[in-house]
Length: 250
Image (cartoon, rainbow, N blue to C red; front, side, top):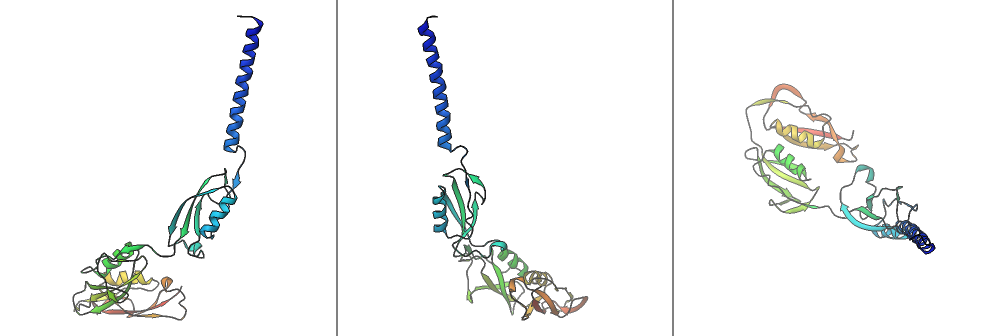
């Protein structure tokens, strides 16, 4: 047991174990590229093919591509078909062959179902349209009761469930009603168009003329700067009356 050969074999076994252990750890380091990292490039604003090529040059992989149509205000300069967002973020350190997830700005908006606005109040109709990512266009008065009577898209009557692009404008017919009840005029100064429409609907009033000043560069950001009749708490106008609004950019 304690012969020279025993100690030699034991020493050889220990050396072999140490050698194998070192080799395994070295191989693991080679496989995982230990202490080797790549700085993540900024893909924002690149077309998909350009982004994929850049990642390949850096031994990185493009794994998943998603798309969005609407982008944050700070990324409005990004054109359709270009990278909006990415993960990992620019400047991070990653291993080679790391998978990348990117978001592309799509060329067309997603489609949504046209809701059924018939017999709803104008306020309810506005709320439902906004929940679908749609916008109220013209509220055209017709003889009849105040609820929404018809709904239109691009001048044509549209049935509920019809697919239309998100962000589209929908026009409606509303009954002009008519009442001997006198009410006050709400103050709409400083309100956006959608806010003014909501207040008018709640007050049983209608939007009359819409006048945009020459200063308006973006109608979506315009606010009311003048109204007729002027705001008053006194009951001076009838329910269902028109309120004319002037808009300008703040």
